[in-house]
Image 1 (cartoon, rainbow, N blue to C red):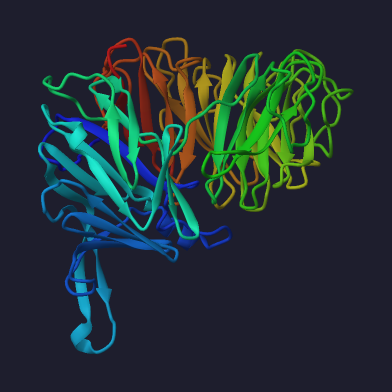
Image 2 (cartoon, rainbow, N blue to C red):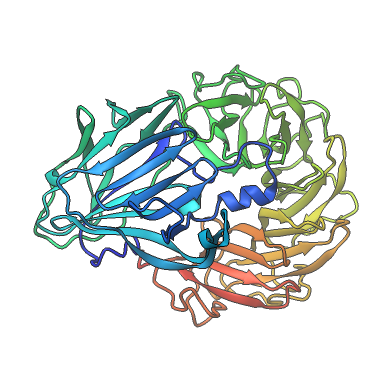
Length: 573
């Protein structure tokens, strides 16, 4: 685990997330709460020193909407929505926790007379019980409003010494998880994970009555150990007996995940969705998972008798999902409804866009965007009014309206389109490209309705619609990444420019993602084979090319005239 504060960079860590069927979220918002409350719930939990506001047995406390935890010598006491239980550290030293990583905020308690007030108490990111058992540290932390703890074992430490006794709760092992039953509530701790260097060490729970310990697989007790395990809330499979590919993911305010992709599995787990019948060949799909990842709220095919691919997905404030992709199925079998075009246009494929109702049981609309050639929808986003914005690739004959460019520039151009909230018409639709091959992979939209598009282009500045920046000159190789800002009417580009060097920033090495912040800064990520002598590195995160191909990340200033930073993320492969 990065920065455990346990006094060593080598050791064995077992990461254990505390939770119920949902992880225990002391700060988690209920559905429908305000954006402010949702934002607060994503903040890290703050551990507050006890200076008289808590019982004397507690050294520190942490509070959230769901309850609180008190940390004292030898135990932690949980208060969760009317239920209380304590966890004692069996056979451990009588050691109080130490706070590390001071947070900028302070906490004040105004209770009763002035003499009882406690003001400007410091807050901390983590608590550490140092050498709780010989060579073993226990570290509590609270990322994103969720309480978690780590165990850090130094070389030679005995994991058999680790035991927790639960008072006021009953324990039961359920598969790889631990079930903790308290009055009126059931909590679960997921499978413990342990790593030694890059090697995963098998781990599980050992339950004896109301005590629980750990069972670890073989590992080297004497070799220095690197600490960096992942922390999973959930992980699992989605698919049938064929090939199943997930291409896009989105998350709503309640924490439900929405995924899209394509499948050739006739037994894909389609249920409660608008279409539970496999159309044949390849079908697109859309699925919604509950916040804990334990169940599908709905899952459905989107397709006809041809090949259908789900590529991009977005979700609005009401939980409606929007999917973009490509289809070679005609309107005789593809589930068209509403628009923006109900007729397949021929050629290799049309782009499509579909809106799935919040409950997942029906399509609000579904239709094509395409011409007689090959067209494919890739990126998709949605604004506060429910209008969908798409990007992708288009050939001649694509349905243009308003702009930003109504004329095809080569065999394949990027496109950008805005679909009305009802899905029945295109607010605007146009090309972004030059005489070479151009592809618009990703799209984002700001609060004013300006769209930001990233992709790659083989077109030089003699034909590509460069304007303002960030770079007005094609840099060589076969292609550069590009970023463009489309004005809110869709009639033109506020800026458009290259990000690249003398190598390639295309296809597998492509500008694959774009996002925009409240200040209008655009963030672009992708891959490159250009080294630092030609790629526009600035500030970081890494100014030196690492070999073969690297990922890159770049921030474009609000005017589009320059990069605020640009750098590599990569290694020698």
